Image (tube, rainbow, N blue to C red; front, side, top):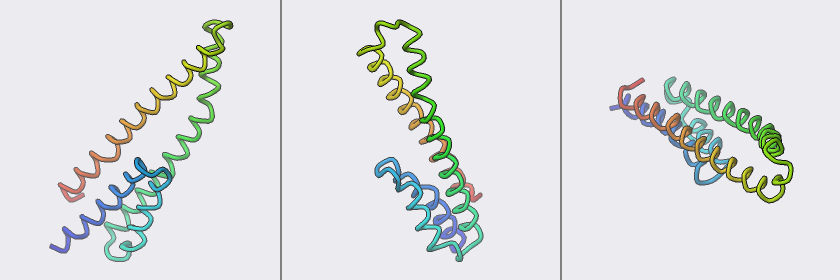
Length: 125
């Protein structure tokens, strides 16, 4: 039973990061709280907590890096299509590209975060 409890808290380190979908910025705070409270209980919790925090920090770095170059890519493509339509149509196209990319990224992140954590909990890794 005790091993099951450690597996549960290791999984909670991973699943607590999903609160970032509801409250932006809390995707790192919730795992830090769980990891901070339970890291000395078992090496499994310590390892999983470090992996979660490492993943989230890497994800933030990649996201901000992509967001920094994305406007330049959209503006360049809109200007290349038609210099006259770069007014209101360019803004709409840029907005639609942004919304589409965000939806795709959120869906992929859900798959990347949820499925491996649930499988790890079920099979005890």
